Amino acid sequence: MIKIIGGKYKGKSLSVIKGSIIRPTSLMKRQAIFDILMSYFLKTDNKKKFTDKIILDAYAGTGALGLEALSRGSKFCYFIDKNKKVIKELKSNCGKILDINQYKILNINFNDLEINEIGHKLDLIFLDPPYKHIINKKIFEKIIKKIKNSCIIIIENDKSNPLPEIENMKIINEKIFGKTRITFMNKK
Image 1: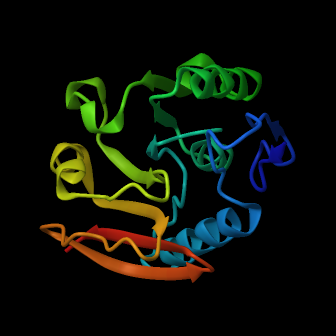
Image 2: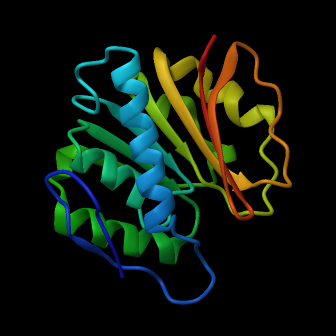
């Protein structure tokens, strides 16, 4: 089990499938991600911080990143994962914490996402694919049409897998945790 670490759902437990189907973001990494986001909001004088933000949690697994953002005041989250067992656990995690109008779960491969399934402009995007997954530009070509100018994209991947140059996006922060690289990007 893992727990929500901040906000109104702090301390709520999330179920995790046993085995190697998923790799939940550790407490230390989640804390770092949300500390960096808070610091960025303060530097950019974003007084709303997480309030009313629309989130996309791709390769969602337990949903910990999206649920953490919702706990801190975000308005809505799209959770995407392709594994049916993972989706079952994700539905359980969302159902025991959230109201049904706070989220939508899409059981698809993120690469197969039809952009019209995302009904809102996005403020935060979490991309946490399997470590050996190579992140390519095609992923961004779809979602770039659905992001707000202030959108932040957070990518967690194996540091040995280079990120592609993404048109009109810049890296605003990057942290290394062992073999993991966490990259924060926004529009230029």
